Length: 171
Image (cartoon, rainbow, N blue to C red; front, top):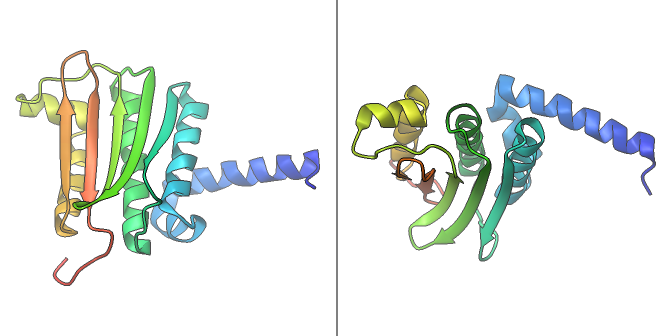
């Protein structure tokens, strides 16, 4: 049974680990989380704790089975999207959802923030994070995946990363 001082030590370790994820997230993310779901749950809890934005993880179906590189990529991509929600969208609520289907693994980040007009590319890059958005889209394309963005002014935004569960030759 854990004592209170052990729980405090775990919390301190958790905070230190979180700080290091921003310094070198790729290395840490590859080794810390056994599953994609565990990594995404950790990110949603941290966002809520740090920003006060109510954040939840929604899992659809069975746990997603992905290789280590894809898992790390999706956790990092979700982290970037959640930080974008916290800094740009004026959201009160956010949700991360994960599903595995015929297209592959889908991880979506949705918020109830300001939204934007999806026909306005300049608005899109400002709202979704400009360089971060373009980098994420390019990385997904290189993995054989895609980035889908849905939004309406004053009705929030949903960004979905779709990627094969395993890296195939040529990607």
